[in-house]
Length: 307
Image 1: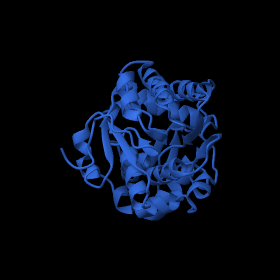
Image 2 (image 1 turned 90 degrees about the vertical axis):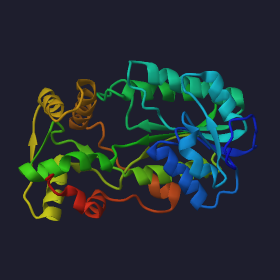
Image 3 (image 1 turned 135 degrees about the vertical axis):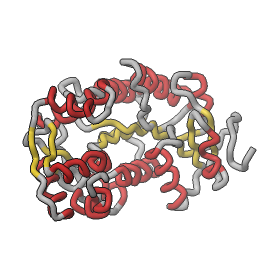
Image 4 (image 1 turned 180 degrees about the vertical axis):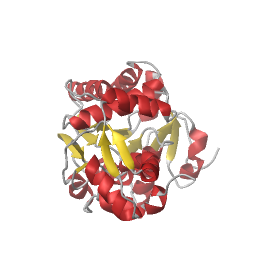
């Protein structure tokens, strides 16, 4: 077994723990903690410990954890003082992800964790039109009811999501979706990771909910304009209804349930539910969030029409 990799009951006290560390966000949070020279032990949990061998070689304690198995979570969380729950991707059946998160909250309390952090969603309350919102709302409620110190990080829409569809918008000169005139506080995954790492490593012990966003909001017309300026090709925003948006996504190859979730983000946007911009990234990290214009400029090559 490689140095640092363990699934035993070793309990480094005062440790910082990140779940889902084999995913993009979780791994990046761990890397940022290492880059900042964090002196406290770092625990990374995953269903696939072998995928984190490189982090184990850098001194990270890697533990197997299954969100469907509460006992495995309690063992994995042993010794952690502050714990980041990265929301899972279990969307195969309704309610599974909320149940997984409930397992994690109970396990954290049983393991003696002092502060829980959770990656949530902008405005996930009962009024949200986003298909994923009920899971996040249920998890936030569980965390609050647990009585644990907590930091809920309500991440807005990842700017990276735009890169999947914008090349086709450039090719057709039309950006088509059901967002209407609504705006989104697009935030980069990197900024979400920076905010999470900073909050996890902080000394804050109270209870707070933070909206993690880009520095400003943007409508789809704004996105189309920015893309046009970067590519030199005119792109027009064409609003459609939600049903048409979902049908278009299915036509592009997305499974119907996934297309429905994406279309629900459009519906929420049109109602202003994602029109949130804060300075939380700067306040947590000391560095400003990346603007949408800068992000798109950094990924100009990815905007080229598919060949």
